[in-house]
Each structure stands twice: as C-alpha cells, then as structure tokens.
Image (tube, rainbow, N blue to C red; front, side, top):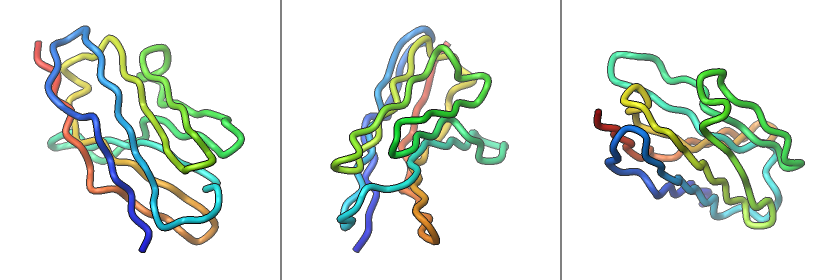
Amino acid sequence: QVQLVESGGGLVQAGGSLRLSCAASGISFSLDLMGWYRKAPGKQRELVATITKGHVTNYAHSMKGRFTISRDSANNTVHLQMNNLKPEDTAVYYCNFEHGALNKWGQGTQVTVSS
C-alpha cells in the first residue's frame, strides 16, 4: 500500500525555522515529482514547492529565498526547509507526489507561526 508520512510541523515564532519531511512507502521506483502544498484557513490549497527526480525545483513566488525543497530520490523522501517564517505561513502543509497516473497526498502537518 502506497503511503506518504509527513513529519516536522509545529509551532514557531516569526523569524524562526522548521524542517518538514515526507517519506513515500510502498513504492519501488523513483517518483517523477514530489512536492509540498499548503492550505491556510479560509483559503484554497496552494503550491509551495516541487522537485523532480532530477532535482529540478519550482517554488511559489512568496516562498523563494525562504524555503528550500530537497529530496533523496533513492528512497523517495522529500524535505522542506522553511526559514524566516511569517505568521502568514501558518497552514496545514501537505506532501504530494505525481508519477504517471499516480497522484497521492499525505494527511498534512500543521505549521503555526506566532507573531
């Protein structure tokens, strides 16, 4: 059974840092695309960043320079280093992968940034 397990969320003060991790299990091949999305209260889910198995990255404009996505393609693990966090970064962060017709979401991890 394919699963995505996220970890690393929590409460942090503005200006602080958090590192999110997500591991895909039940897969024996390197996934084409892994990424992070987030959903804040009252808003639609939005892209944070994605990374291909060739390590090509894509960031939402507001995250560039503050967030860094990385992955270990051998074991389908993706990380999101978040620095200089702002209260508006408060959201549930979701891990995602795409591989051909496969598209899987994690259950989400809460990130709360206090001012």
